[in-house]
Length: 193
Image 1 (cartoon, rainbow, N blue to C red):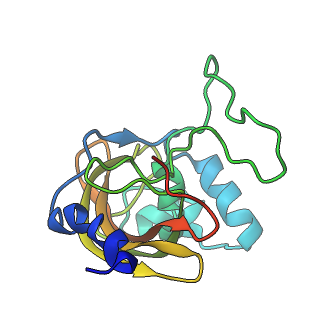
Image 2: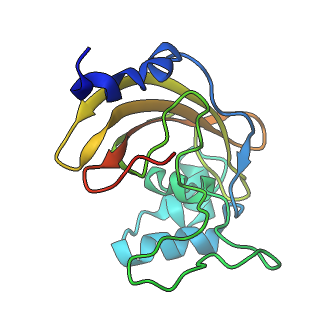
């Protein structure tokens, strides 16, 4: 193996972990689905489908009540960024500084090499049941589906694919989600120790 390929070897443990569920704990969304949030979501889109604001129309169409648009489900699955009593979210004041913590950052993975950056590459949803007013979403699981080391213009890292589910309070799977992430060390930075 050449020195140029040594960085790829660091990804071998993660490649061998394909199929492992890294979702150690369930993550509950910050807010219950409510009619006002659905209205605020639809408002800038000027999306006037009565299934999303008229309980009678939704029931007449065979639903149990007002239904959230499928494109809004991710919003209801994310925990709060900050709660009263938490430490400050932004601990530095630089122009491009990032929050000290975020519920949408990838988890620390014990078998992956440390990285300095990441970005999402793609996302897919399988919608399996309706999200209704009164529902609360919980994110369950985080199964590694693939890991492909690759050097790109931004750095050296690995394209990874993950799958998790959003369940309502009744344990029904509302959506199955697959996300792609590129985890990497930028060319202009040193890999973290």
